[in-house]
Every structure is written in structure tokens, then in C-alpha cells.
Length: 495
Image 1 (cartoon, rainbow, N blue to C red):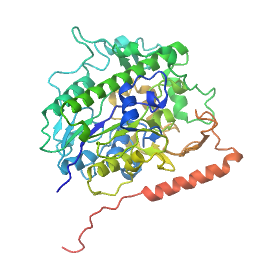
Image 2: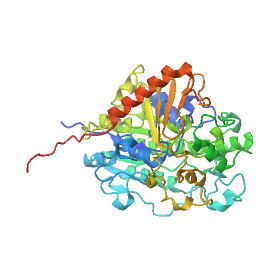
Image 3: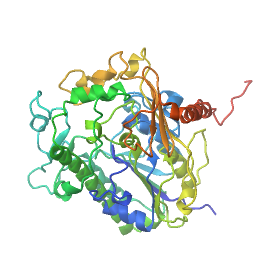
């Protein structure tokens, strides 16, 4: 008798830092849904890392089980091609009804979505912009002000008569709930993919979530380096372009609290989906995977938003939480072993019993769900940047940010010049150290025990020479192990 496969929910908020959750001890985070799951029936990985610190390359990685370097996914405009594997396509080909509600950032829109899902959801009524009824001009202020590139829009206002801002996320949550209610359980297993927008900047959220965060409990920021000595040129360049040096700590706390409010709203939206699963009798047969694609500066180092080729923990460490079906053994709680987002498709394959049909580099996390003492990876990796001659990796396609009016101009203007700022780089992070190999500027090495905020680059310190050499060797092994993929199916030599 064929074993019934579980339903799958891939709940994928955008740009959620790994430290903004109650279950990791953050006193200002309001995440009761996630916290309750971790307390009762889920495992949260507090040391989960993405494989690229911006949206599309990260999504291409966790949807394939391939690192960005395998097929050159290092920009927002180079997505998965039809010959590349993709988790949603795998599930659809294996008989799942795949419902996709939310942003793309993973497959070329010109190719369509039919190969990847049964439904690419579009709501009946058009959502508002994420910042509500305000215009962008209203919340950005004067172009010469120190708020222009801050991404801080503050309290969002719903349209008259609306209980909340009917933006894309609310539309997708409502669509997902309706898809759950309409699903015929005996027909085929369901996969819901919810790549939401929040808490991606602009930093804005409506009440009650805007006022829910206690500003006095928001953790202090990681300070800006005094002279940026030993730090990547990209960070210094963004700091100069964003012009936030005059901000007081009260202003920073307001920005960070707004971001926390966005996370709180997403947590509430997750609860609505879980409630719908319970109401339809599907919850116990459903695997929930909650994870973000990358993090956000949110004031750390005096910066907002993200970069494409630096690897601070606020950018690379992400939430990853797994609630398996009730039939799968689990010891709930928080695990601090190292894991990667690239482990997501391997875990889904293990949960569903789908055979591995392509070479990939993820590892199933199911053994870590049941055994609190099981160990994950010895090191995690993240990549980004470009070669000098790679004009195709400058993201010139982002035409809205080719002048100083664009929100992303402070970063993209640096990606489009042949300085050292957008150098190709790769991170190798262990529990104790972080090493970053940079092509056109000084490498980085941080002792994470004594310097968790990565303020002091020890790459030239003789006392750390053996650590540096060890991590260089580990990086070489990583590239040797993952440099290519051999197809599972062999070709015929003769016709």
C-alpha cells in the first residue's frame, strides 16, 4: 500500500533576520505563533544560514540544493532555467497540487509558471503598496534629507473602512486560506508556497503591530566601525551614500521597532494559515517549513537594507523552523547546530519519500528533529559579488535605481563601477570563526567568541595564522566538493 504523502507548507517571508524571534531570547520580538510551535511541536535552528545575502540567488539555491556558484546565480536577474531542478517542479511532477501565492524572484517570468505550480495566485482585487495609502514621496521626504534612503515609512495607514493594509501579503494569506478550504484531501497532497514580502523594507506596518513593539526592549545596534579599517569597501560606500550618520539612537530604535512590528504581523499571518489547516482537519498531516531568504542590516553598522557581497550575521543568519507531520518523531526546541537553507529541499524529499533525482548538496534535517544531540554541519557558506569584467552582473536591468532617486541607488551605484566594492567573495563560517575570501580587497577573519559583532578583522594577525590556513583549506574542500553536478541519468553513446 502506498504511504500517503504529507501536505507541505513553505512559509517564506523575505528579509527576516535570524535574531528577531522570541524563541531565541529577543526581548522585543513578538512572535507568539513561532514561539508556541517551538515549545510544543517544532524545531527551530538558531544557526541557519543562507547561501547568498539577496533574494534571487538565495531562492535559486534553496530551491535547487545547489550553491550559487554551480550555475552562476549571483544577481537578481539570472533565475532558474528550464533545465535546472526546482523544488516546486519536483513536487508537482510527483503528484502534489502546488499553490504559489506571493513574489517570484526565482524563475524567469517570460517562461511562465506552469511547470512549477498548478496555481500562481492573483487576487481578485488589486493590493495597495506595502506602505498603505501614503505615497512614496510622502514617506521619503526631501532628497537631501537624512531620511531619503532610510527605507523608514513608519506607521502604515489602511484604506478607509479597512481593518488592515490590504497589501500583497494580506491578499496572499487570504488566498492561501481559501485554497486550504477548497482542497479535497483524498484527491492529492497539497503544497502551499507563500513567499511573502514582509519584513522586506520599506520599514512600515499598520496597527496593532506598529504599536505592539516596546521600543525600550529593542536590542542595541552593532555600532558603525570608526574608520571601516579592515572592513569591505562596499559597507563604507553604502554608509556614505545612505547618509544616516546623524541619526540618534531613538530614531534607530524606531526603525528597528517598525521592522519588529512587520515580523509580528507575519507571525500573526502564519497563525491564520495554521488555524485554517486545523479547521479543515489537515494540520496533523502537514509539514510546515518557515524560513527567510536572508536578513537585513536594520541599523547594524549604521546601515539599512542589505548588500550583495558582504556576509555579516545580520544578513546571512536566518530563521528556519520545521514542524513535521504528527507521524514524524521530534523533540521540540531550539537547536544551535549549523545548518544551511540548501538543506530545505533535502528535508522535503525525506519528509515526502520523493527519490533524489538530481545531484545536490543539501542534507536532510530530519535526524536533527528527533535527536537533540545530533550534529549538523562543521561549516556554512555564503557567496556573492562579481568579476570586474562581468557587466552582466551589475544589475543594470534595475532601471529605477540608475539615478539618485532610486531607493537602492546607495548600493547599486557601487555595484556598477569597477572599483573594489562589488568584488566576488565567499564566506566560510564555523561555530568559532568567520573567514571571507575577497577577490579584489583584503580578506576577513573574525574570532566570533571574542568579537561576535565582527568589528576586528584578524586576517593579518600572526596569532590567527593557523586558523586562517585551516579555514582556507576548508574553503578549498568546499569548492572541490561542490564545483559541479553530474546528471543522475546517463546518455546513450550510440543511437
